[in-house]
Image (cartoon, rainbow, N blue to C red):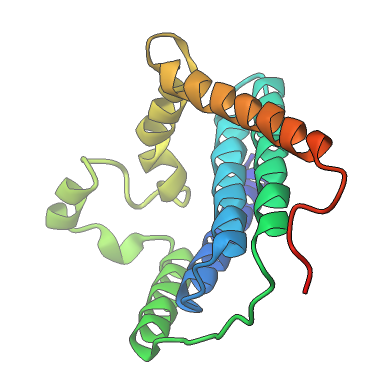
Length: 187
């Protein structure tokens, strides 16, 4: 179980670092925003499959949302003109990113033994900080809240998003099928 949790944490940290790296580039066009949304939904469904006993529900949700996002992505890329993207990286954000990366690496190496103070223990809701899987143990309540997002009383918003993606897919298919030429004017 420890090896599985280490692999899980490695996947989570790599995806989170990829998201922060894309945000550091300061490139906020439609393509990068949809890529960020796909990576964020991938993170949610990895968490959901890790904490639940049945992982098929998270796979079905992932396939539904990603297929809808890809259809929206195709629609936007067919309508938006090809423009050059300028990369601008802010130095303070790179410094913050590096400090956070080093802090996480240092916390992982030390197994959280230097944080066994009572004041710090109160911050993390009196959890066992000296435990090697501290991040997993402290986040169990948070992932139970993710479960509430997909189960009965709170799942209305999720179903609304799924219905919106389905409706958008039908509208895009209708728009694309009525026009025999390309949607974008080619110069």
